[in-house]
Image (cartoon, rainbow, N blue to C red; front, side, top):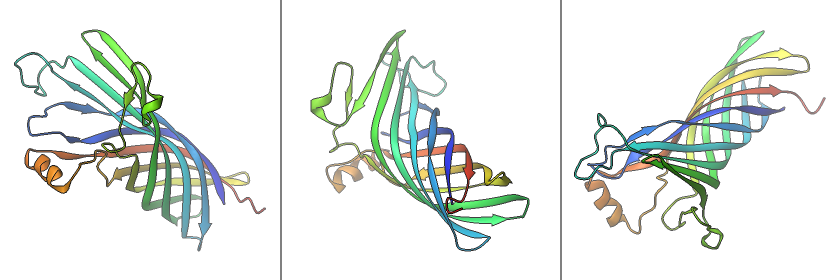
Length: 223
């Protein structure tokens, strides 16, 4: 069986650069769509493989006033948002319960690759925005170049979620809610010693996190 998938994704990036980093992070909203293939081992257990386009990222606010340490209670005067477009391949085990209205849970790993991105900054009512690029020869004015030696494009993580589905016409209409957490730091370090020194200074890994809500329509292509 296979189905199209369309929905919304809420994402943020966890992490801190050092013990004095008191910036305030927030969620971004993006579109998620793709296709899903499902192989049923039985009426209750199946394996799904998905190919998705998904937007991850973050928005951050912090105070940059001279001589002042940023605090969560301060009035933030600098805002920065980053949006990364990923091609993602989740492979999930699905457990189905019920007959008419069917409820299910699913979990499994996902593999992602960053294919592009955009950023936007706002400071003192001045806005700057541009594309995030990974090839230096493609960088234009206001673009942000992310050197692959310093920033990771590949992502690996885990999904956990569930949903409900019902037979409608030739297929099953479903609503899916899931939580995803990345395992890999989006930043890279030159050596283990550099990473340990950063951790000793309060560094915490920057990892993708998202909550997605999608609609699906599953139908059997063999019929």
